[in-house]
Amino acid sequence: MAQELRVGTSLAPPYQTKTGANISGSVVDLIRCALDSKGTDYTLSVVPWKRATNSLVSRKLDIIFSFTENAELDKAAQFSTPLVLEKWYWYSESGADHKDKSVSVVVVLGSNQEGWLQTQGYVNIKSVSSIENAMKMLSTGRAKVLLTDQRLAAQSAKRMGKDIGSLKANFSRFSTLGAYISRDYLKANPVFLKSFNKSILDCKPVGITLDETTRAVLADVASNIQTWLRVSLVGDSVERANKKHLSITNQEIISLDKQWRAEAKTNARPLIEETLGNELSVYLKQVKKEHGGLYSEIFIMDQHGLNVGQSDVTSDYWQGDEGKFQKSFGANTKQPFVDAIEYDESSQSFQSQISLTIFDAGGETPIGAITVGVNVEKALDKQ
Image (cartoon, rainbow, N blue to C red; front, side, top):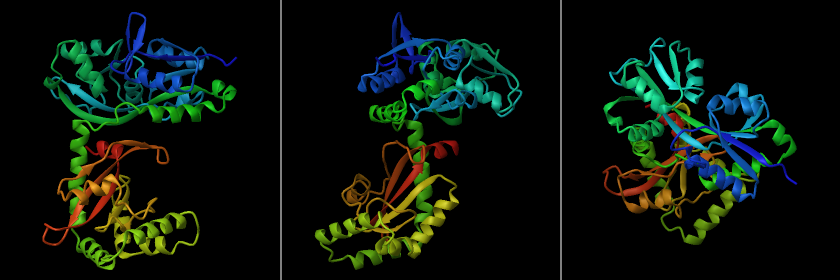
C-alpha cells in the first residue's frame, strides 16, 4: 500500500483559510486539485509557519506549501514548480522610509517576508502571530512599515473594515511560492515530483491573471517597445518581406512553416540561419541584450504572419493562425495585445507576450506585427 502523504501549511487568507475543521483557500484548492487528479492519498493539516518548517525537517510532514525558496529547507526537501505569484508591498501610515534598514518593520512570525528581511540586513523586525495583528501594529504606530503580499493585505483590511487605499503602498518585490517535498519521501517515490509539478501547471497556479497593477506595468513595457520599434530598419525590413511574399499562396506558407519546424530538429538549417542572420535579427538580438533579461524573445512578422526577424529561434515560421498575430495586425489596432501570464518551465519564470501592430511610415496602414516575450518578474521589479 502506498504511503499516505502528510501535507501541511499555515493560515494566510485567501491562500489558506480554516473555518472549524474545514481547510480551504485558493492555494489549498490548487494542492487538492493536483493531488486528487493523481489519486494520491493524503492528510492536510494547518500549523504555524515555524512548526511547518520544523515538521518537514523532522520528517513529521512530507510536504509543506506556500513557501519561498529557502537555503535551509533545500537541504531537507525539493522545491516544486511555483504555486503562487505574489507581489510584496511596503505599507505605511505616514510614508516611512522602507529603505532604511533600521526602520521598524512588522511581519508575520515565520513568514516568507520575515526570512527575506533577515537576509537583507533589516535590524528592527517585529514579528507577530497574524496579518491582522500586523495591521494593528501599523495603525497604532508600534511599527512604521508592514511588509506583506498585496492580496493578503487587501483581504486583512477588508475583514478589519479598514480601507487599504488609505495606506501608502510601495512595491517591494515579486515573489513565487511553492511546495517543499521531503527528500526522504521523494527517495521512496521518485516519480512523484515530476507528476506533481505537471498537475500543478494543469490546475493553474494562483495569481497569474493580469490584475490592474500588472496590466499597468506591462502597458509601460509596451510603450518602451514602441520607442525602439520606430527605427527605419524595422519598417523597411517588413516592407521588403511583404513585397517578397506578395503573391505567396497558403500552400507555400504551410510548406515554409513545415520546413522551418523540420530544420529546428537538424543541423542543416538554411531558412532558419538566413532569418536569424539578417540585419533585423541582429538588431533584435541587441535590443534583447540591452534590456537585461526583461525580454525573453522578440520576433517580427510580415502581413502574412511569416517571420521577418527574431532574437531567438521560434517553434514556428508562420504565426498567422495565432492570437498574437490575429489580435494585433489582424485587428488593425494601435493598442497592444497583452497575453495571459504563463509559467515557463525552461526559464523557470512567469512570462507574458506583448504584441503590437507595425504600421507604415505614415502611421496608418498596418504592414506587420511584433511579439515580445516579457519576463513579468523583471517587469514588476523595475516598477
